[in-house]
Amino acid sequence: MTELAPDSPRLVEIQASCPLCGAKDARPYATHPEILYVKCSCGLIYRKAALEAPTNTALGDTALGNYRHRLRRRVSKSRHQILDALNHVAPGPLLDIGCAYGYTLQAARDLGLEAAGLELDEEVARRGRQLGYRVEVGTMTQLPFGDGSMQIITMKHVLEHTPDPRSALHEVGRVLKPGGALFIAVPHAAYNKAVRNPQTSRFYLPDGLGTQGGHFIYYTPATLSRLLGEEGFDVVHVHPHLWHRAASLPVQLGQALVAPLRWLAQQAAEGFGLRKEFWLVAVKRAATTRNGAATN
Image (cartoon, rainbow, N blue to C red; front, top):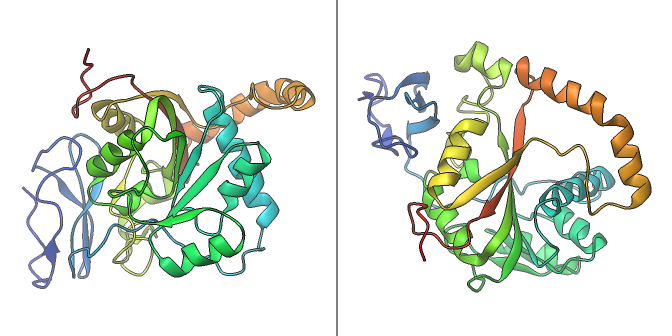
């Protein structure tokens, strides 16, 4: 079991055991007087202790500044991500958890989808409504939406902000229709710069992404896929798709032409640890128990 740093008596334990496998044999990974990250034998990296215990379940960084800053690029990226999900499910209502000022909601509208967003902060939600979007206030462990009301749920740089991902995914599974798609984007724990020297990486610094209210857990495709599988989801694709069946025919032809080069670039990025983030699409099983076992 990992001991808290003796020179940091004010540290409050956040996780007594690994959120993925439950083991208590995690070893220090990045240690600072204000914060302690550990790495479990299962591969999960998580925040074990900090100066203060978490007070809420954050939805990510909503301090995005000017709404129009890089607006077109943000909406375009969101459109690509939604199309990734539509490679595996039919169109339907979409929920963006941690919607900020509506980039994904706008992309969903452009694709003809009914869309709603969720935000933790009432002021951010109010600004989203002023822009014409449906935005509700809540947390990822208490979604103000009905059972099976969504066909697609997107969680972009959100899941790393909770120390209790199982409760969040259980709630997502409640709201998502059976056979619906879950799109997740998170920081990549195998990012080369972070792996080379975790002690100085922005991922784990107290005044960087490791700040209180920041990132609690860092995943790899393997650890996140395991977690999703145990919570009733089947991961169907990792990293961006090379082709989108819901895109227009000219776009599909263009994607087909550059697919070999994009595939090679993806393999190189993964092999050399150049991905700072990764994303995946998972599909909710038709009927499951909490531990992911099928039911009749």
